[in-house]
Amino acid sequence: MNDHRNWAIWAADCAERILRLYEERGGADAGPRKAIEAARKWAAGTMTMADARAAAFAAHASARRAETTAAAAAARSAGHAAATAHVKSHAPHAAAYALKALALSGGAVQPEQEWQMRNAPGPLK
Image (tube, rainbow, N blue to C red; front, side):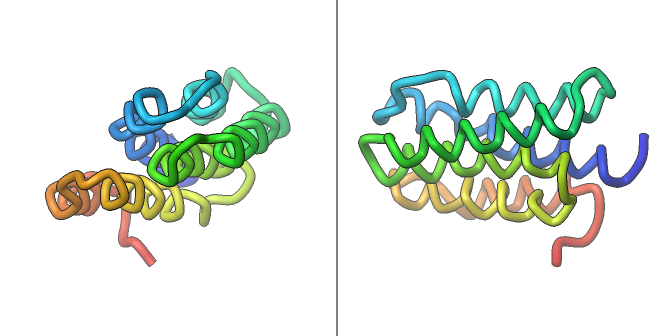
């Protein structure tokens, strides 16, 4: 699997690990979950970049409708995961928004950041 696809999988993993913060704290639709699925499908070669990008836009729309800032950050994490299909540099944004969602919800940020660093497919820039 190529480097770009590995970053998409990692970004989807980062977003999925905190997706509950969207679903439990004010997320009213499945846009972020579908964006995570889109990132994985694109990485597997079963979805076009354009369709993954559309899923990213939908997740960002979900973020704008979220009831809490933590839920919005979690949705944005998912949106950036799907957007990684378009440009690899979205992957670190998925990770950063995942950490932001945790911080806003009072969650443990450091262990998650350590997980991200250990599992990243390359150096984070």
